[in-house]
Image (cartoon, rainbow, N blue to C red; front, side, top):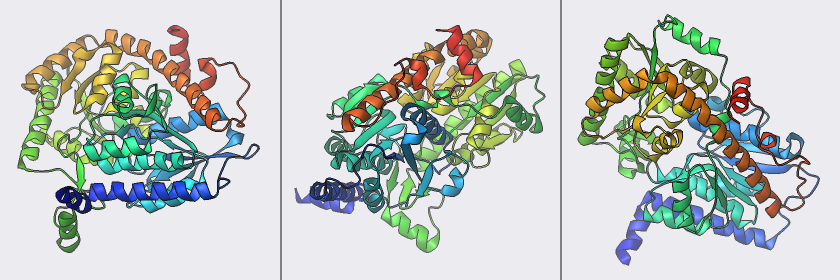
Length: 481
C-alpha cells in the first residue's frame, strides 16, 4: 500500500490525474452551491468550449475541429451559439476556425480547465485519439478532464468522433470516474466496446474530417510542379512518421538536464514530457524508414513515378527528411509547419498512390478516390482500411519482412488503382451519413441536457445535419445514394 502511494506521488502522470480530479470535484461542489452559475437560459447564446489538440500543426487534429465547427454551426444555428476553441499556440491556428474565439492553453492545464470550463454551457472534446495511452496520457487527461468538468456541473459533456484504445490502469480509472455522465460518439465499434466497459455512454459515428474541402486543385498542383513534378508522371506521396518514440512520458530528471545543460533536446516533446527513446528505438525507426525507401525505389524503377513526402504534423519533419535522404535527397518534402491544412490536402489529392502511416492523410484523400496503402502503428488505419473493404492494403510498422511485403502490396495497389479509386469514392457517402447521424445524436443530447434549447424546424434527414458540402461530395452522394 505504501509503495503504491509513493509511486502515485512521484509519478507525474498520476500527479496530473490527481490534480485534475481534485479540481473537477471542487468544481462540482462550487456549482452545487450556486446552481445558476453559467447555466444556459433560453434566448441567450449557447456557449460551448471545444477541447482539442490544436496549435501544434497536426493537420488531422486541426481539420477535424474545423469540420466539427462547421457542422455544429449548421445543426445548432449560427445565431444561437458562441464557440470557444482551446489552442496550444494561437499563431499556429491563426486563420483557422472562422468566427470562433480562440483561447491559449498552458502546458500545465488543470488550473486552466477549472477556470475556463465553468464559463461555458458545455464541453465538446475534439481529439480523435481521445482515450488511449499510446501517445501521451496527458492528452487523454486533458480530454477526459474537460468532459469531467462539464459533467460535474451537470452541463453538456460530449466527446465527438472519438477513438479509444489501450489505457493503463491509472488513465482507465480516471476516465471511468469522470466520464460516466458524458456521451462519447465514437468513430468505430472497437472504441465503443472499450468505453462501455468503463461505464461510459457511447453512440456510433465516424471521423469528422470527411467533409473537409481543401484549397483548389491548382494550388496543390502549383506546389508540386515547383518541386519538379511534370503533371504527367504517376505521383506517389509518402506520409512517414516516427512510430517508435511513443508514448511520450513525463521525466523530471531529463527536464532538469534539458533546462540546465540543453541535454535530451532531440527527445523533448513539450513541457516535462519526453518521447520514449533508446538505441533499440533508433534501430527499429531506421528499419521502418529503410523499408519504405527500398519499396519506393522498386516501385519508381517499375513505374517512373515521381515521389514526394508529406509531413502531416510538424513532428514528422525528421521522418520526411530522413526518408528523402535515403532516396538520394531528391524527394521534395511538404511539412505542416510550413503549409496550412488547406494547401497540404490539396497536394495530397493529386497522388496516384498514397503510402501513409498517417490516418488523416488517408481520410482526406478518399473523397478524391486516392488509393492508399497503410503502414500502421495502431488500430486507426486498420479500422479505416477494413471499412473500405481493402484490408489487404494494410501492413504494420513492425511487420516481419516489411520491405518484401510492402513492395508486393504497392505493386498490387498501383496496378488496381482505377478499381480502388471507384471503391474509395463509393465508400465516402456511407461516412457522410454516419456524420449526419452524429449531428442528430448531438442535438438529442443537447436537448436532453437543455430541454429549452430551440431545435431547428427541419426534417431529420441526413442532408440537414451536414455542413455545406463541396461539389465533389455532392456529386458522390448523388452517384451512390
